[in-house]
Image 1: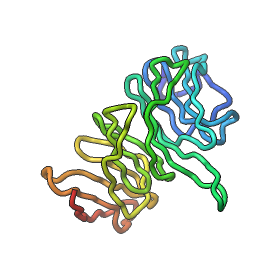
Image 2: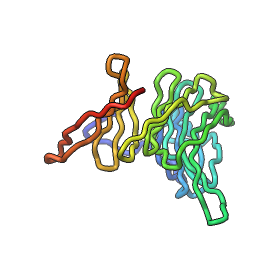
Image 3: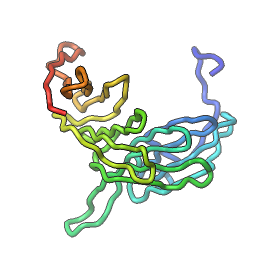
Image 4: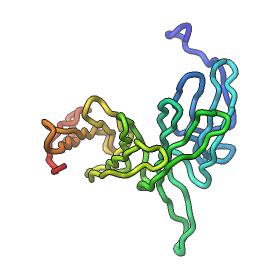
Length: 211
């Protein structure tokens, strides 16, 4: 951005509606939604020339959509939901998926594991992925071909947008508050949940759950 006080559109890519975007090097990675003009999925865009972004790769996630993704080195970690038919109608299944993007023009799906269809956010810390899905899921991603759910923590309010800072995970809630999950002295797991509203400030209380 040459002039921060007067931002302008440098380039545009038509035809894709995205729930989230992440940038690594010369590439942007889009979590394509079911509202896209094409089928939903992981869209990889070359942004080395900001004036002419160009789609170079795609991995289908149809029928369904990706809700969030993060990129680290040559791997994309994504969450989303897919539709499938059941006797009573259409149901949704959530998935956490790892995609190899070492060749941006030919992304390859690696490992995946089921998560709730409400999965709406993901954060990484070393070899762990933290998925906000109404609750908090912790997934070991040390082996990209075989991610494993290590545990989960039930939380009173629906959560989204996790972020990891030091030893704590911060998540937004559907009540516009913030949930903080961390360790106290390496012992008990501490959950700080939003409390009564005072103006726009949430007063937290603390509850303990054995880890």
